[in-house]
Image (cartoon, rainbow, N blue to C red; front, side, top):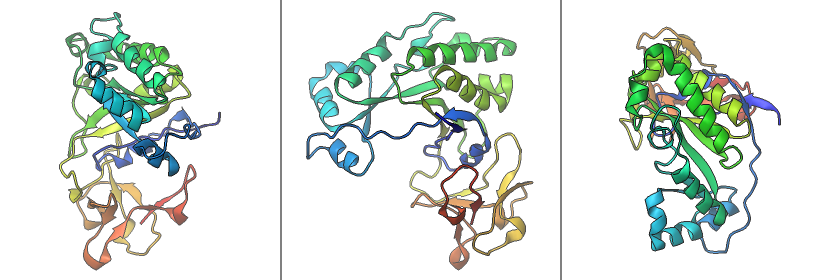
Length: 290
């Protein structure tokens, strides 16, 4: 399987888009269409369009017959709600419990559902023993946790939300124990560690809090670690202008809006331009333009 870039999926936040600057070696797996479901279901409709239709369940939901019946019939992807989070899987240092997560994986397997692992690193639902570690020990604890859990579920999950909500709504990083111990380096380290444990899994980082929900959020886009902003060079307005990372100064060429159509636009009114891939390219290394 060729190595490529980790695709970092930013969920419900636009300020973290340029985290894609983290170029890491990761497995790129080809999408395999799941078996055709019975006609008339939501998952069948999704499959007909080359997509999947997912839901989240907890181990408590497994005891609710009506809920599991709907989940098994209508969905072909499952995300555990809490059962793979740190406070459940490693409540005490070096003491692991994968039982609750295993139950959900078994349910998914029995119903032909793929599983999305959620999550390996998050400032919430984090045991106090991690938060109280000397900062010099946080990296090793994080790497051990990721390695152990990702190895346990290797081949059983198709993707991992490795890092959950590392960003505040304004695009800054949450000052959690991981950030305090390693700075921005913890993002790349967590992703590399997860890839080493399960090279076949797709890896994501879910962005964080949002102040705009349905779109309309406006502000600068900050590059992780660089301390700079996404910038249209010299405030150019020609279609096809390649964007760059530049010192933040608050100019109109650095103010981006996340629209209700999930576009990132710069400028306003009749001069509005959207962030795009050059020539609509999809390959690694494609230039980003407006």
